Image (cartoon, rainbow, N blue to C red; front, side):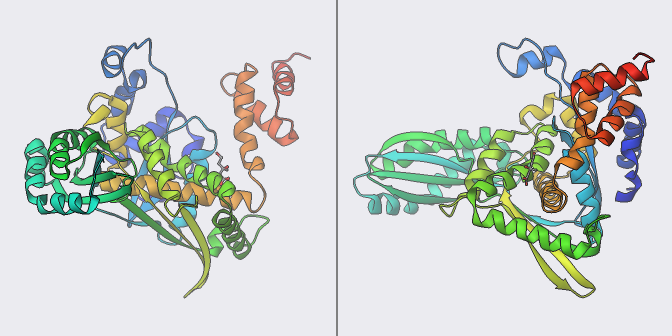
Length: 428
Ligand code: MEV
């Protein structure tokens, strides 16, 4: 594999050159991306089979995040997102993190929770004892309901009983889903084993469904960045590091800020989840539920300044549930999602989770660095200017020329773009 730095300047070349660079990096044949990405990777006939009442497909930009080093390996990160500057900012942050060796990450075993709701439990202590005594039988039943998963090394990993009070008990069946996200298998297990659990507890059977608070399937990412790597033209690195820590402490102190801080993290995660055909609502639900697990909504990532052997460093860490799959679901049918998986080279669902989370931490760093120093608008300005130029009717190289003028004059609005465009085209 080529190194992370070999993508420097990727934003300056055209789309087909970019595709070529990615193909060479990941060892795809020339033209493979063009073929896979036709019609956005999803033809109408296939789309019509995926969901109901289809009337078309809906395109979003697919980009690559670059300069990512995860556990010592250079990675290209596919990202589907509509928001300008997310990809550029996260890639820039990956470059900074790379100066400290990149991101190190680890993932729990891919264990999902199947919930079985029990109502009208007259004696929760007895119900618990009865369920726990029959744990082996329940495990056998569950494994019989998912022979394919067991053959791939997954299967039941345990039973937990939670007394919710008022005669309600939640039973958690822990299911190792290997490289699948696991929603279907987990729901099948809950529906298969649920009636027997209710019988053992002498209870009325309620819902049988997975929990999106997948807190047995977490990912942890860390990075240690030399302060010098954070410097900008106007800001010394040590000041930036201190400013990022202050921004982190703001999110730690205030749920209103934590929500936006976490949105910035999801700016890096969701695009990877979407690009690879995964269920981003599930990941979002898990992330925010996990952020509120103490009863108070908190930031998923935090930053601290520390003293390293070679000077001041900024240390960042992120932990969240990450229920992703690299097999099953939409993936099998979506050419672009399959291509995205090849591009990032994830060999397991756990690895994909670590990659997405690393992009989340990068995205958070980019946002905090910009917000806590020069503010976010300056960086956004030139990208926003491109959309305004397009909206004003600029085409081809007019787009960059109009955008550059708008950004320079700090007058990024449609009327100004139309005026610049008229002038460029030789009008008034
Ligand atoms: C915008 O999409 C995301 C930010 O608001 C995140 C943050 O405030 O940390 C910039």
